[in-house]
Amino acid sequence: VQLVESGGGLVQAGGSLRLSCTASGIMFSFSINGMGWYRQAPGKERELVAILTRGGSTNYVDSVKGRFTISRDNAKSTVTLQMNSLKPEDTAVYYCYADVGMGNSRNTYWGQGTQVTVSS
Image (tube, rainbow, N blue to C red; front, side, top):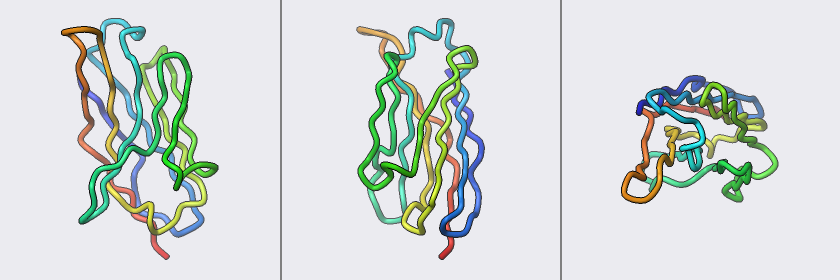
């Protein structure tokens, strides 16, 4: 399984960015239990930003609620994070993840990370 991210970059505060993550090597899309995004800022621990489950439930860290939206395209095994009203504190490396499989075959996969920098 490989996760390929795109869409990071530099933006001014108040601007928007759209991150995408496409999973390959997964035989059946229904085997994806959930996909989402974590982020890690310098000197800080990695934190969950947003998650989208197979059933369509979403969860966001409080600091991004109302500004970020996670969505998916099942046919393309792609999850997207639309980030609006960006703030300097959103600056971090954003990592896509996928929770795939069940039982002993359940695994979590990670993308390589994409840098998001928000200037003040």
